[in-house]
Amino acid sequence: MSGAGFCRLCFRTGVGARPHGSGPSVLEMNRKGQQLFFVGLFRQKRQPLTSGPRTAHRRRIRYPVAHEQLTLADVPRDFTKIRGEELLPDPGFGEFLDEAVLSHADECGWSKTRINVTRQGLRLLAYAQATPGARIKASYVAELDPVAFNRQPILDVLAAAGVLDDDREPAIMTWYSRQVADLPDAIADEVDTWFQIMLRGSSSYPRSKPRAHVTIRVRVRSLLPALRAWAAYGRTSLREVTRDDINQVLPPSGSDRTLTCTALKSLFRILKAKRIVFSNPTTHLRSGRPESRIPLPIDDAAMRAALGSGNPAREALATLIGYHALRSGQVRGLLLTDIRDGRLYLSDRTIVLACPARQCLAAWLDHRSRTWPESINPHFFVNIQTAVRTAQVSHFWINSTLGFSAQALREDRILDEALATKDIRRLVDLFGLSVKGAERYLADTSLTTRTAVT
Image (cartoon, rainbow, N blue to C red):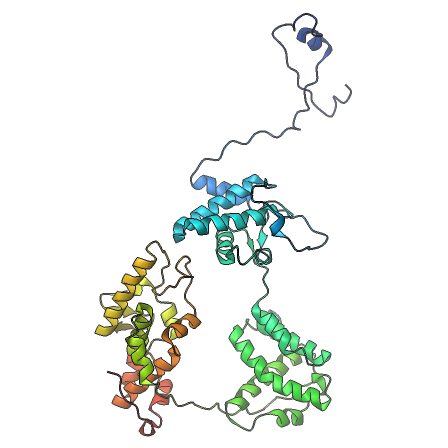
């Protein structure tokens, strides 16, 4: 065969002749030349990976794969037509995902049912991949049947294994699109420039960091009445807005005026810096001071019902907030190691726990250890969703478990101390308030009465 200049042939010699009548012998074939295969065209068999840290390191390098096949069109996947026993395009990636599930399940104390359902969901996702072994998008996980599969454990495993491509759109994007849908196109485009800078920040002038989603929602809500009023006046662009237009839509006073002024100043400052508007009509605009709401006591019956409910979680929350006035965020972030020796160790102070609080917290720990004995969640409070994860409980869970607002209970406790002592220094030391914050509870205390909870 010609081509010896660009390839290499392998030859094999025999040790004997073939039986008579069965064709030419091996020796005769060797004299004339016998081609077996081209060198390098066959992949060598990989050695099995051994267990241990070296295995994890080698597999992390391999998965996810660096390349990704581009698709002509993103067609919705019908996972109901994929059978679980079908062979995966990349069996090695399937083994990698199985090991990731077992490792994560062992750490979080999952049940066999959760393990099997999660493995089946990951197998379906791996089979439907355009590029076997690539990162799996979170939007593909959302296409799984929510009745048959719990999506959150699948996302947790993919994130822990480093193969999750989180392409989910933040909820605030959908919310914002609904809010500005009725505005003129030019105004909506101008406001969208401000919104994108608030959401993602800007490295060019005016430089700014991304704002919290709560802050963005408050400012958008404060802007919308003014924007809709200008659109009703016939304004088609924010370039047409003057100082008189702003004065017409501003509330006369109070917190509404402060929030609206703050939002308008932020909007026009960014648009002026980006040269979208010619001038800033909010320059030297006085926003006034926000109203200070006087804290009010809560209904004592709700507090008594929480303390005598028989629910360990509810009683623990009620005593922890009702006796020591913790914020909802502090309760969510409490770790098991933060409560020891009858004391609660916060980042800014140490609290000696009241006797009823110690008893309720001990009862909650007993209930937690009986209900979720294998949970590795380091947080003090867990529920059925977070016990198999390491995440915090939500603000909604705290309020719903209490039966009323945790912030209202905190203010009730501080107000009770203010009425009893009228000592700013005591409020600052006990509850970690600032001097200005403590003065808010001491204002008009003579007009506020309540019955102490015993």
